[in-house]
Length: 207
Image (cartoon, rainbow, N blue to C red; front, side):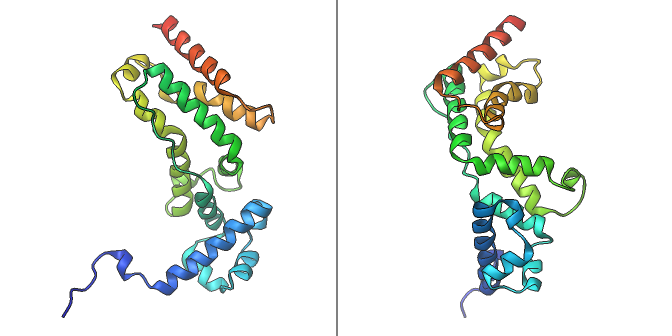
C-alpha cells in the first residue's frame, strides 16, 4: 500500500478549495469594480454561485471576506537593492514605494479601510479575525520589511541609534502616503532623494 499524505494541504477537500477560490474570485472582482461597499454577502454568493452557508464556512463575516480580497490585490514587498550604500538603498526603496502607491491605489484603499473601517480598531486585541490579521501583516511586510532589512545593517543600526524606529519610518514614508491621500502630483525619484537626504541630514545633526 502507498503512503498516505500527511500535510494539511494534501488532506484538504478539493471541493472546499474550489468553493473558496470562487468566492475570492468574485469578491476580488467586485472590490476592483465597485470598492468595499460592493463586496456584500449577497453579491459575492450570487457571482460565485455559492450558498451563503458555504461562504460562512470559509469566512467569519463579510469583513473577513473583504480583507481576503484585499490580500489578493496587494503586490509582494520590494527587494532590497544590493551593492549600494545606505543612502542610495533608501532612495531606491522610497522611489519604488512611491511608484507602488501611485500604480496600486488598492493598497492605499486597504490601509484606509483597515484604519477607518467600522469595528476594526480592536482587531489586534481580540481572538479570531485571521483574514484581517493576515491583511495587516501583508501591508506591514509590503511597506516595512525592505526597510527593516536595510536598517538591520551595521550602517543602518548606527544611523538609528537611540531613534524610535516607527517615527523614522513615518518620516520616510509619510510624505509619499500624504501626497497620494491629498491627490497631489506623485513624487518622483528627485523628490524621494530629497526626502532621504533631509532625513539623513537631520539624523547627522542630532547625533
